[in-house]
Length: 360
Image 1 (tube, rainbow, N blue to C red):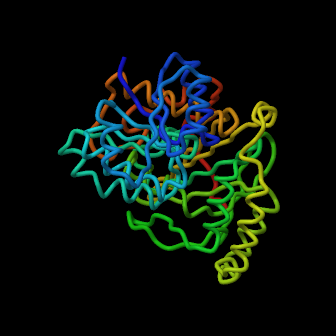
Image 2: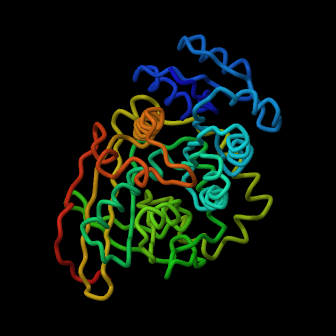
């Protein structure tokens, strides 16, 4: 059996994935920087563990020396990805993570040539944040090969982890991007909205300009114009809208101190009951701007954290079975859209050609 490392195993999402891995018959080597929680989880699950600080490059190299791949679950990924990526290139270890935002993908993409030379696959974004949108984008492009525009949106129900909430709130004051003619152009969160029909309701999706899809979907489909949205709960949607004008306040030290104090009071993540009652919705639309032809499709799936465990384990299993492409990759470009859309609990709607009116 090949050795693989699950780094950040005792975090909220890492633990979910560790448990899902064992249930799937896998035996990851758990890793992280704190011995006590790592040993506790490893002993409970009957797994080996390795204590590693990301600042210790020699220890990292030793930890990865016999590993086929590492799955990085230690957010924020803007901190953990760089040292782990560097170690993977040194040790020729395939790299996967759960990142979901533009900068982390840009950094991995910059390492493409080095990774190809080393025969190493760099595959960030194997969680809910990218896998379903990437797969849906590829499936839609197959339906309309001449597509020049892509829009993607998602909605989650079932609670949010402290880490995810921290990432969203810390991003609010900062500009993001949209993709126009294959260039990333600055854009503000909530600066535009669109309506999406789902289950007989009209949902309002707000521009979410930090999404990793702006890198991954472009890589997977070659579509030059991409816009990403999120369907936020009412209060968060309002906060996103005002962030365009109050960014200066949100960046201030007093505001950040209050924000961090509030975040510390939040639970680590949704309870099992919340996850059991939760769900996800993903929507996508491609358009050929020359002909006006459009195709849209959507999917429903498990609660977001359960979905992440599902997709991460599926990607690890594929990679361990030698489904490998060296260099910077995306989930659908390596494993194919069909396999990722056929995961348990996922239902796809509307992958067929049809005409649409221009949306407002």
